[in-house]
Image 1 (cartoon, rainbow, N blue to C red):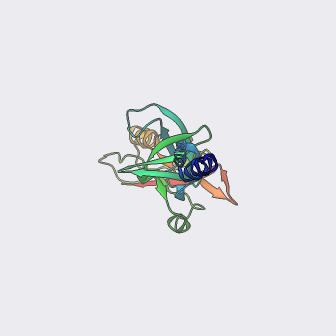
Image 2: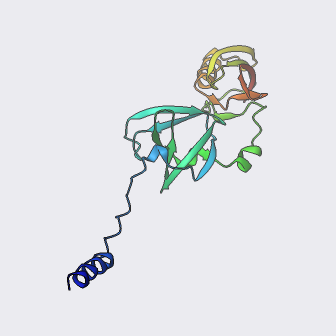
Image 3: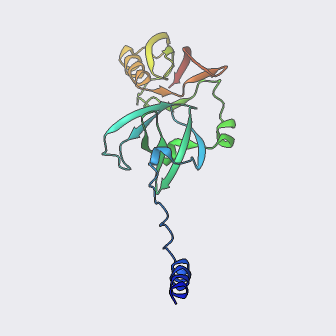
Length: 185
């Protein structure tokens, strides 16, 4: 009888099922997620925020036409991969490759145009504005003033100094340029 008992115990032991191991759950850090898209910066300087809020700390910035890996979209905010991990940017600061192909970055154009100066004069003002690689006006030179008003000329020069341009690209490189600006009254 002993052999039958041993055989039964062996058979019973073989029928006992051990629970299947629980699948290991591993949380993937946001910076390690695969990108859901690649888009491009469509503004001269895009601020990167610590979280999806305009009052969050700014943790970096990217420039016009730089490629950005998109990790997540949340309303008007987009989570991106940065050099140091992740950050949040305003979704309106990004564009698809197709949209960027339609933008001419070889000709000067304002990102922030100079404010209009009200005046009761007639004539023309002409300026040369030196613009750096970031699109900031760094120098303004008055070339022509047929209005007869130095005050109006100075006010227009100040307005031009506060203007911002989209950076010019030539063969993928930003370049310094001189912009001829005219104001007619």
